[in-house]
Image 1 (cartoon, rainbow, N blue to C red):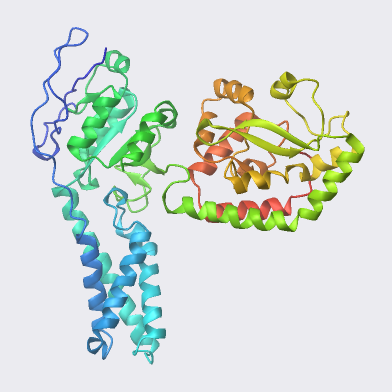
Image 2 (image 1 turned 180 degrees about the vertical axis):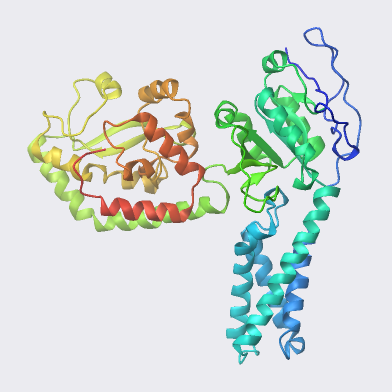
Amino acid sequence: MTAESTVPPPAGQQPREATRAVPVLAQRGPVAGRRLPAGRGGRRPRRPSRAALPLIDCAAALLGALVVPGAPAYPSVIVLLACGVLTLNRRARLYDPALARGVLDELPALCGPIAVGWTAVAALSPLRPLPLSVLAGAFAVHGAAACAGRAAHRRRAARRRPEPALVVGPVAAARPVAAALLRRPDCGVQPVGLVTDSLDVLAEPGEGPELPVLTTDQETHRAVIQNGVRTVLVVGAATRVERAALLRELAARGCVLWELDADSPSYGFGGRPESAGQLAGFSRRLLRPAGGGPGGLGKRVLDLVLSGSLLLLVCPVLLVCAVVLRVTDGPGVVFRQERIGKDGRPFTLLKFRTHRPASAHEAATRWSVANEQEMSRFCQFLRRTSLDELPQLWNVCRGDMSLVGPRPERPYFVAVFSQAHPGYRERHRMRTGITGLAQIHGLRGDTSIEDRCRFDNAYIDNWSLWQDICILVRTAVLFVRPTGS
């Protein structure tokens, strides 16, 4: 049985016309003795124009060009400048209304493309002999016009066409967040529904904004379609873990996911509710599907280039290790074991064999510790230097793993650790890796699973290609160490 309800506006306040609940549900019967309101018909809310910000940037480029003597005689230069700035801004997602930030917050990202554009104009165009003062003046006018135009447009759009949003979380936490957003129409986000559990609704009656309460995935998907929702506000890290499947589906539908901290609101220096760091006083963090977006391709290219190059370079090392292992420990040089990879899919991991378990059951359920006494000296050397991990470069080439990511584990331990640590399964949002953020912080071998889980999820939540490069560099520096993996 599902429950759908609405809750009254905050105490002492009357609902404003601009913040009335947007209907998303059809009429339903009563639940748990309460009469539930019928959904009201209505038109889909008008969405902000996607052409406004690009047009503002084009106008700003034109104003900047007017400062340069002789520039109007070369319209092609102005067109190329505007097109270049638009392309770079789009790659930086400066035209996504769901990622709207304050002008000061996005100033560095906005000035970068402008600087690149004017540098290219000065170096390549017929206007090449430009004095530095003229170039600086054009850059300043271009940047100021873009910032002023964007600020004016967003202030107007925030009040006239706020971005419809769903608030996901327990009713006790989601209701105050929705009420705070409705009290701040200048934040540019208007909640149109609360997504929670039916038992949570019945257990938490009380005051709050008059919004539909959605208790099933079907109701949530209908709300997204009918209201044109592209912003989803997730209240608390626990909700992100508990509703992971629904959030992945919403992200696949094109929604931008933000995690809000309703327990410790953050107030930025500028106090601007639409800034990237906070929303209506609640600190927020962008949640991105692992491996998705523009960076997913870059990560895979980095994996293929580096793993392929390293395989060619370390072929002599692989051959020597294989021969010595064959001579000292007998046949069976390569160790194959089932591990759990991205999205919980199993794959066969390759390593040099450093010890021989008594049975298949022991191999699957025994927690292996580096430098075990029964290992030969050469096997202990392989474990200490992590040379036994080199065959996993082939796993990276095949796409089973990545160079950087959470370390893969056996199915038995995945089940055990997932029960003991709530966020452990979330590590599988991204391809597992040979090294990772946890490993460069010393979390290898017989170390805290809770700490590993925290570092791995922090790496995924804040992933960037530059972070991968930094981890690889630090791994190379720590390649020879006293503990194994």
